[in-house]
Length: 91
Image 1 (cartoon, rainbow, N blue to C red):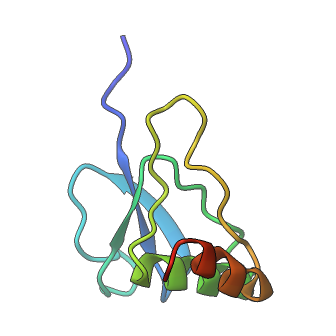
Image 2 (image 1 turned 30 degrees about the vertical axis):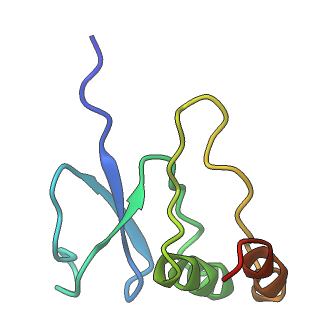
Image 3 (image 1 turned 180 degrees about the vertical axis):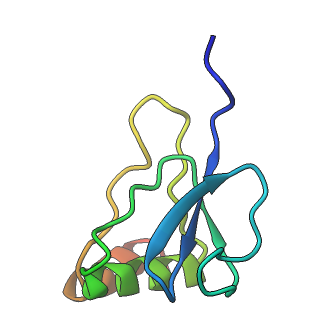
């Protein structure tokens, strides 16, 4: 039997992802962790641009959540893709 499907939490400061049931602070830097959704896949820690995109998406309320059938859908990975993505959503 499988265990519970855990929420993914991101630390934008450390550029790390954690999976906990209830997480509030990063264990490394003690800054707040952000609930990203069950389908979040963290970029490489060195990919600063992609982490910035994820942080901007988070600030607009966009998470990585789905019904489980097809994933969360398209999410931009580069800053130049953000304006069009946000415009389509009226943000």
